[in-house]
Image 1 (cartoon, rainbow, N blue to C red):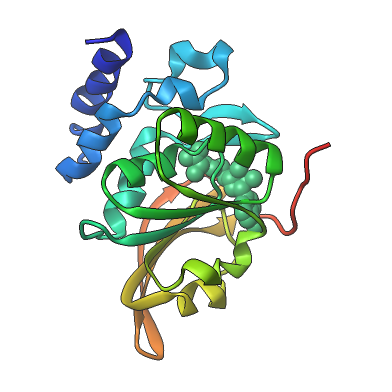
Image 2 (image 1 turned 60 degrees about the horizontal axis):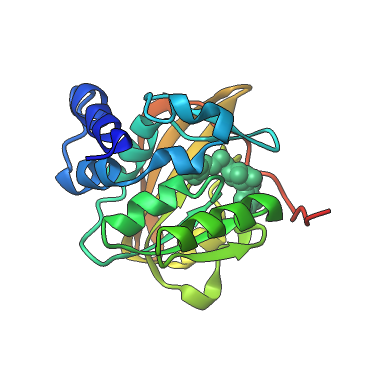
Length: 214
Ligand code: SAH
């Protein structure tokens, strides 16, 4: 066993399980993913701590607990199709992929998307990475069984709801006040929807437009 594999298992056994994550598919995926590849080299030593880390461009890789928690809230079945808004490091998308989901992920900062694609390729993860403003969703791969938004949103976009199947869930950190979001699960029910609120959390903001490489 490599050292990182021991650390990834410890992250699951000592943090995520005691913190209440129960879905074994999520726990197994996290124990199998080399998270140190998704963080800047100088922070590799912290990769298996249960904490968020900066990944450049003012963005962060989410805390493993939040990744696991949001994944759990989507209520996925094996092989479900998931849309992620906010690829960032690519780690959340990797967790979904290793769990056996079909993943489309959108990132507005080209540099970050390009870096995430390199890691996906290196690990042979088949993940559809799009560079665009995720507020529009991504129609070409729709409909999705679930949508996960990994940046703090001011509102739930109509495009996400229209691109999810009936009964499908959108998990999104919704802005409450400066520096505070609350996890919302919006489940589509025909022409309407049902909202359930969960944990308070902290995310970088969902922003408009695309930032191209210099
Ligand atoms: N899921 C990521 C964490 C992402 S941090 C991970 O596992 O590492 C949030 C990301 O959302 C940032 O990379 C940010 O650039 C991106 N983002 C913000 N607004 C966006 C938008 N409108 N469309 C797509 N991506 C967006």
